Amino acid sequence: MMRASRWCWRVTIYECMSDHVGGALLAVRNTGEILELAGCDRLTISPALLEKLSGMTDAVPSKLTPEAARSAAGTSPAVHFDEAAFRWELNEDPMATEKLAEGIRNFAADLVKLETFLDGLLAGATA
Image (cartoon, rainbow, N blue to C red; front, side):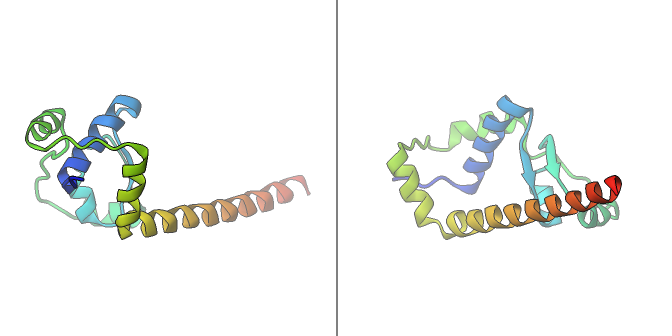
């Protein structure tokens, strides 16, 4: 099984997501990730990272463009997975399995916090 480079995955994400939602909807954790995703239509950026970015004065070239995706697609080997191969590769990549699971658990915990908060607001509004 041939492993895809990070660039290839980034291009694939750009191509797939831009077809469906007009750009990738991604959550980023640091300014370096934001700069690497320059050109992405939609990013979820925390206020703290927006503050850091607002202090930057360097030019930021777009890295994710349709032209770059087409160009990289021609130089990267095509990667095709059936379900079994996909599951194998997913399990072989600790970042994919552990961080994905951590992200899902954190998202679920935050959802519970949000529901509790909203319940408190609604209870206060009806009292």
